[in-house]
Amino acid sequence: MISTVVVFIGGGIGAVLRYVISQITLLVYNGQMPLATIIANIFSCIIMGLFLFLFSESKIINPNFKIFLLVGICGGLSTFSTFSLETINLLKSGSYYWAIINVVSSIIICFGLLWLFYKKTI
Image (tube, rainbow, N blue to C red; front, side):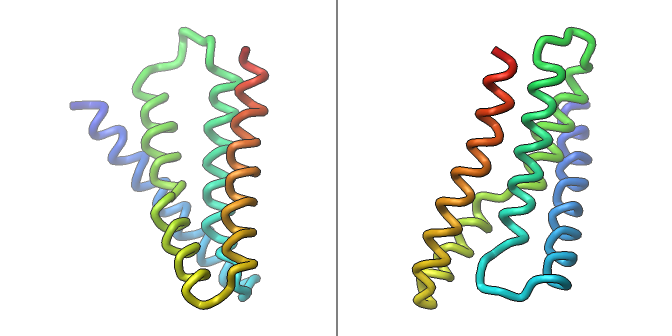
């Protein structure tokens, strides 16, 4: 029961962070690329990667904190569904170049970040 509440709170924080990122991005960028989603997903991967790098072997980390951060905050912050919808909208509008850039950059950056952190924990 406690883990459900922890995920609920963390997910809410992550969702609010994603909203803030989108609002800030709208103030400074008005292009075709869905930059806010990429930033939110990258930020989530950095949080997850840092956690895995810094605390992967630690026995002192409370399991509820791990769930709060990785499932709650990172889950609420990152969003595959929005990434997918924005990519489909780019394709529908004929912005094939931006759709390809969106997919390729998201995969390379997000997977790359996690891979770099993961390699450091081995």
